[in-house]
Image (cartoon, rainbow, N blue to C red; front, side):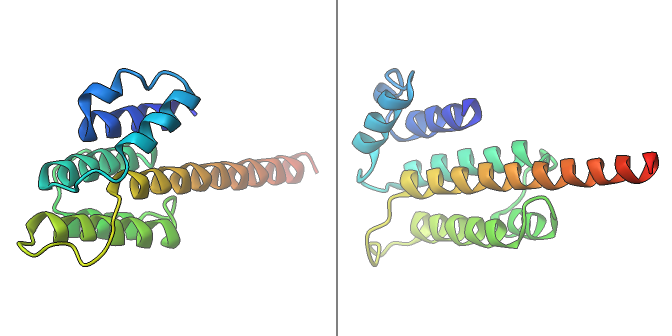
Length: 149
């Protein structure tokens, strides 16, 4: 929850610095997120939101803290077993879509709320971490049972 709150706060700062001050509780964060969602998806907002999302994924899955292109970062995610294929694919689609919108001169083809999508990725990342930890604990318990056999 703390990690999610820090990511939410960073997303709010990226999207609307004045609103970030109110992100101190879950209820306030949800309300603030709702206020930020739907804002114009400027290149600056998309860049900041994708940067925060990449930073979150790098930190929680202990990926190297090097500057990578979106393609390189997505390849790294796909190779990392802890991330899993589903999360890696979802993150790749999100980050590439942000890049397409950032660098396109045409208006977006449909609605896209980068903050909301990023928060979904955070939720998926947290779920993946819980699952990974659960499996690691089960494996350690099984190994201990066999050793004590």
